[in-house]
Image (cartoon, rainbow, N blue to C red; front, side, top):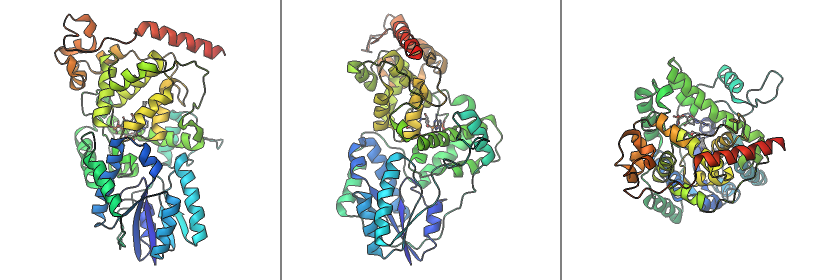
Length: 449
Ligand code: FAD
C-alpha cells in the first residue's frame, strides 16, 4: 500500500512522528505544497529560506520530493488519487491559516475516499496538553512553564526506514525555487537538517553553558539561532531538549525555559486565534498614523543607534537578536506611537523565523496587551539599553557604518560628540523624554477608560 507524506512545517526526516506513521505503508510519496497566496505575500528572503530548505529536503530524499505550487485542497487529493494512496499523513499545524486550509483538504480527501492522518505537532508540549488544576488554560507564563516541565516531552523517534515513491515536481516549480534562492537579497544560513544540526551542536558545545548571561549581549554569538530551523521544522524542539536533558547549568535551564515560551505562545494563539493581529487584552489606546516615522524605523534611520542597528540586522540577515526585537518594537509603539501590527507585519516580511504566534505575542508583550503584559509604563530607553547591553558599542558599529569612527560606547550618543555626525548618520527623529511622556499620558487615559 502507498501513503502520502505531506510535509509542511516539519521539513525533516529525523524524529518526525508523522513520517513514522506514513512509513508503515510499503511506499511513501513525499509532497510539499506551496500556497500561491502565501508565496506571493512572503518577502524575498523568506521565500528563499523556504526554497533552500525544500531543495535540501529533496536532496535527503534522493530527489523524490514532489513540490507543487497550487492550493492544497486541489493538489493533495489529486496526488493521493494518482498514487492510489489510502492515506495522507501530516504533522498537525495549529495556526489559524493552517486550520482553515486543512479543513478544506480533509473535506476533499473524504470525498475521494482517502484518510487524513495527523500525528504530532511542532511543539515539545502540544497546545492544550497542560492546564491549571481547575482544568483551564494558563493565562501567564511562569505557572505554565512549571507545568510544561512537569509534563515533559516524548523521546525522539529517530528516522524510519522509508521506501520513497518518486514524486514529480513540475519544471516551473523547480525553476521558481531555484530562482528564489538565486535572487535572495541576503546571505542565507546553510539549509537542511545536517546544517541545522551543525548549528545546534556548535551552540551546544560553545555557548549553551553561558547562555544565561550571553543571551543579552547582541555583539556576542550567545544565542542558538535555532528559531531559523524550528520555524520550518527542520529540527524539532524535542530533539534539542533530549540532547541537553542531562545538562544542569543555568544556561541549559534558561534555554529550556525559552523553548517553553515558544510552546506557550503557540497555545495562546491556538486558543485565541483572533490575536494574530488583535490584542489579547485590549487597551483603548490612540495610535498615530505611521507616516514617515515608520519608514525611518524600517530602514534603520531613526537616529537612535541601538534601534537602527537592530533594524539593519533584520534587513541584512533576516534575523534580529531578541533584545533588539524588544527594543525596536518598544521604540515603534511607545516613542513613535505606531500601532503594533504594522511593526509585526514588517517583522514577518523579513524574519526567516517569522512565526505568527511568537511574533504577534512578542509584539503584544511589548505593547502591554498580551499575556504577561509587560506593564505599559515599562518603556525601554534605547540609549541606556545600548550602553548596558552593548557596552563596547561593537554591535552598533557592526551594523551602522556611519558610526564606525566613534570608539567604545560613544556610538550610543553621537549627539554628544563633535564628529558624531561626520559620516552622515541621521539626526534623531524624536525626543525620547517628550514621547515617553506622551505615551504615558495616553496610557493613563486609556486605563481610566
Ligand atoms: P535563543 O535565545 O537561542 O532561544 C532558543 C529558542 O527559544 C528560539 O529559537 C525560540 O524558538 C525560543 N524562544 C526564545 N525566546 C522566545 C520568545 N520570547 N518567544 C517565543 N519563543 C522564544 N521568535 C520566533 O521564532 N519568530 C518570530 O517571528 C518572533 N518574533 C518576535 C517578535 C518580537 C517583538 C519579540 C520581542 C520576540 C520575537 N520572537 C520571535 C522571539 C525571540 O526573539 C526569537 O525566538 C529569538 O530571538 C530567536 O533567536 P534564537 O533562536 O537565537 O533564540
